[in-house]
Length: 503
Image (tube, rainbow, N blue to C red; front, top):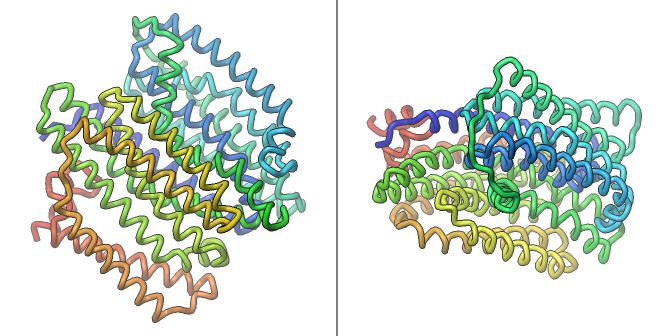
């Protein structure tokens, strides 16, 4: 086994931080929808992808490129100036053309929210460059703290906007604009913290690569892909769903239905929290194996990483699908649109695989297949949205999302099979049996306790269902050793599971 290196420990620090960030990000949507309704959630989600793209670039993509490319300080200074100029230009364009973009989305009332969303471009360059230097020096604690500051301020402002909606009788669009302002305040908080911490403990960054802007842009594109998967799909929905739904219903009905569909974003986020955190901890080990030319060990880790991804993503997806009605009732006060959300939960499996596949391909700098995958996947998503939504409403959008992601994953899988020797089908029969047993037990529970017409009943049923599902999964993992002892060594709570397996 490879010893856990400083790089591995750095990934653990960021993984724990991302868990906190993802939990906060998933949770706030619940009170938001509860108070502002499905229309309020719709308004926020329509604009959210723009915020998310800037966050990914500043917090993940640009820092990753800087940390791994050894750029000189002179190049970084020029880069900072150019990114700042481009950010200001985009900010001005969004503000000037916000009315036109809102009309393209099918709802002119979104214009003020779009203008407010552009403000995140102001702190963006500073955050991106400082985080890149910190990441290059493996100063992960400062990065982690900055992310927590960002998320706490953002969620805090969202909660304030919810309170003002109640106290001052704001419209869902006014409250939405305040919520979007929270992203700007959060990123400003992260920026202030990073500048302050950098003055106290200056980053001694050394690099001699003059670099080129073309390569920089290409690397950013590819580093962004794994983080932008669901955001890109949501962006397609922002520009197509309302326009298609208005062909079969009024704008008000379309807004509410899109808000019901957007509930899925919170549930998907919850499903991905454990999946991505558990599986990506093996990526540093893959990198180390390639660096030391240990091909057999690399293939062993690759198989383990994919097996862990399949196990946890399918458990999360199938569990949520089984409990979608009581979860919907408990979290969002109704079971409306549960069929669409039921289909939508399958996205957890394919998004998890795409994230893992992308990380595994980036180790080899195999970017072309990633570009083909996201391109073909988006074409499938856009085409099916246009074709299916007029006939199947939000169910059609869910089908389009899942099939688009499925195609994306298949393209990446072809690329993976060229780089790695993947043989992990032996556990699938046992794992599929586990999921079937779990589903049967949960469905028996739902049949016996079918009364989830109130939130409290739905809460009890959801908790019991989660416990039953969790016990079945843990028992199968221990009894059938679906994840081996060596694989558990690299995962959170792995030592506990190994003790249980010995007993």
